[in-house]
Image 1 (tube, rainbow, N blue to C red):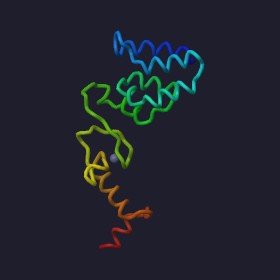
Image 2: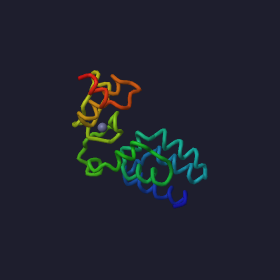
Image 3: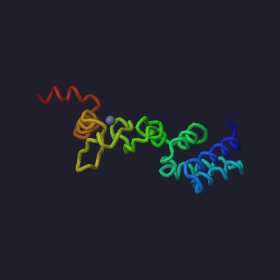
Image 4: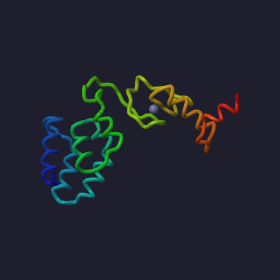
Length: 143
Ligand SMILES: [Zn+2]
């Protein structure tokens, strides 16, 4: 897809996503795309990632054709997001997977957030044994 075509598609998507108003940061990206200033288009997309991430189709279109949107792309691709069940999603501090907030396990008064007890335990062990990649032998030694 060339950048002019991408711009046209994004213009259509931002109008559909918010009829009558559109999404101004997406129009800014389109403006740069039409100018051929791809670096500015990418920078705008990265800076406005949290706003763009509310619109999964736009997030996917930008990620797959312009710039890596990282976890926002994962959110957009998540079935719970696409199903519009309004599950809030976040990223596990251990395995970096996206998961529904209701499944969140926290440690250190909520400072760290994990998708499961396994990830929380793994994280705790790594913090207690910094720089020791072989945790299993360490556990054996302590017994
Ligand atoms: Zn995890």
